[in-house]
Length: 593
Image (tube, rainbow, N blue to C red; front, side):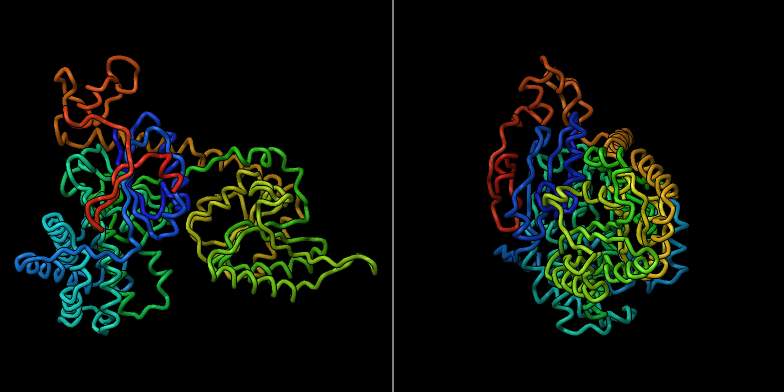
């Protein structure tokens, strides 16, 4: 079958967050064809180029979300009236509390949970329908007029937001919005709604795929919603983190009005995405609970754990005796959410109980905030643990070391995990703990804080303590340092669990089954004929991959949609306007950019 893979800030870009998972999925499902539709988040991301793409990727189209777009389109009076009506309805929907908003009453959330079709009831249903009607109304207007970026940043949009915030029944935080708040919200909504103006929703584009697979929710899933609206293409949504939760964690400095309106938008968009999706695949139970709170129907949910490559960690996992029995290891990205300060205070307690213990902190800082946080942690370590020398003529050494992988001592992450007998995770915020799973592949016992999907990942194969509790973290570490047999049992159980649940193979097998399940229940949207006039069930039939007469040009052209749709080699080209997505490009050219 032919899959439209939708990404935001991920595949096929080298620096994409979900790029590795998508690349493994595409390469693992080599008997399917993939068209990639990617939204980029920054100029730096685009300058980094693409990963090498496998031959089953037939087309890549990209569009930026980071640059300011001036489409140069001047709307007539009728189009301006349509825009004002649709945007006004959208703003009115945002000024009421959205699904997942803490301001919503428990009765309203219970009402949604009781809905048999996963749709809100009563007043909440009216609000959801208002948001959906406004969203698709704007999409249809963008399709008719060629784009909406300028209109979404116009005074008309700001005034519509202001009227909605001042209207009776608006949420208290919305009523407190001032002009700077409204300008900021309008700018953020323009970027989030930019996919409405793309030229991806024609019969020879996303309309020609058999299934849209969104690798994230939020703006990244919006093209899939529009493909379903315009072309009735079924939608699969995979999330390893919910955008609404991310918004709550990343907007602490914004005013209450901005946070409220943007949370309402993300909540409404999530609810509409879950309502229209054929299947939703959370990566863990923690994400699944957030999806249910945002209105997802339980009948559509299929938990699929992220697939990770176990091969690089096989040697460490098969040789647990090589670890230093007195060394604790922390591996990850250095940033405040990892709470290394608590880890350092906990290690001070560990050193008092086990004077010969050592802590290796392995990781690079993330962004300017991470650089400042790393400097603070190094200063704290120097204060808590003065350099200690074995004798009067020996050089002192600090029991805490800050290192990065790639050097001669720690060439890889596997070597970092293998260097210690105990792996520690001290985060206060965590989604799915990939670093913890890597430690499990290495057969290492773990001590972790109870955040995100940590408990789900480790099961009963490690110790879990409350976050921001250095004493509890220290006591758990000391207990395992003093009991090597228990440590070995936990490490072996952790490795067995990881190999059973978190490998690439199980992930690919699960998605292959889900693809077939969705297609088996999806109605026939169009009749595509082969060269002999026989109907084809998918965009590219399975027979096309078998050498012989099925794979000739005529059959391929028919599979693509008709005699004039002969598939040619992709080349680089730019769309007709600033808001147009780029057309098909080759893997070699994309990777070199």
